[in-house]
Image 1 (cartoon, rainbow, N blue to C red):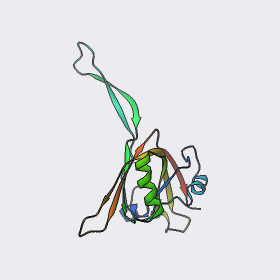
Image 2: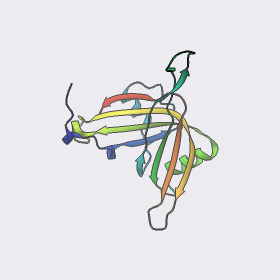
Image 3: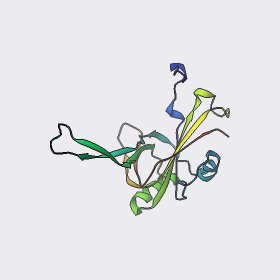
Image 4: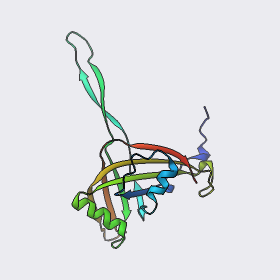
Length: 169
């Protein structure tokens, strides 16, 4: 097992967010996923939140036992929150706002580009993807007087998170 080197830390500023209405959840290779998401990149992303799988816990108390037992239940991938620098006429931003209003099913891909193994664009950087089916449960625009306008979008995961590892093409 390799020991982590603090000088080769992963910087999330190379992360990208893609949203489309084309199903990407059954794709299993990085190359096929890159082709499927081409043109679906969300512009002006400020932050991409947390993706996680969390299992619910079923308690199984037994009469006469000092401690109750527990069983692992189903996984819940929860939601993904994203913050965008709001661009009122950007087609991708408007599509997210409209998806929140009309309930359109969306397919979301998060692409993490790890340049600790090679410079961005070198073909040696490590890439990891997470894809999921979901919907935009909320979309808000923050127009603080003394700050840039930001849009906050929440994507609820409907089903499983699909992870795909790859390298740059």
